[in-house]
Image (cartoon, rainbow, N blue to C red):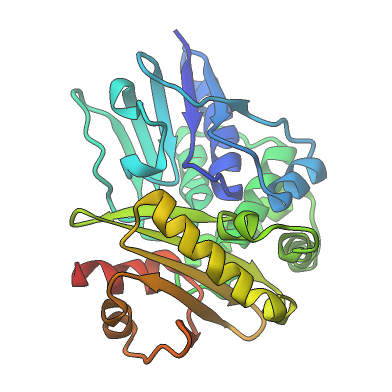
Length: 306
């Protein structure tokens, strides 16, 4: 019986590449077949990565009841298939806080407070003594550069930077930062995108003590490209809040060059957001200097207020 490897809903590059890199590794060290999968459409950034390094799009897997699975890049049930609790979870590789998923049997876990799941996976390859193929090394390298915002994110560690440099050598990429900038240019493109597609580009839902909180993040080279669309984005956030039954929805427009984020907020209680970030919202928005990471600079400050 096969094992499906996949990441969270609205898959980002770390979750897609993580599924590919874990499946390859496991297929070298175990007798069972591991199949890379995903829960939805990939982003333009991820498509750039797959195209650059001849990566194959993982299998779409929207139901997993009765299946054996291996998870990457999160462990919150809200971020996986609706029937995830009916699957047998064999392992988790992650770099976030622990979620609410539980298992009936022991499982393999690799969880570290570093910048990217693929940095953890790189350590797994070393542990098992498995050589990384050139194309997978390139994909892993770009996934790490994406998650760490080319080393600018406060989540970035020496483990991540070392992994990128060593993976770049394997992939035979001389100027990995230049390649990463090309990737972020692709990631920043918003022409023709609807407000809903922008609001769900990197959207995650969190259960904060019984209250559902949605947080979306758009990482861009220059967020001024969306200056004339803020009202449109906000209006769609209000619709999403009602449709999803959210207490609060946040959208972070993250400018990787200015190294900060414009926070836009819709909430049943705006005071929680103001208290979390020690700020005063004006027209439901505020600039947060130095904020680049949802998992390290947003969720840990907001969740305790619930």
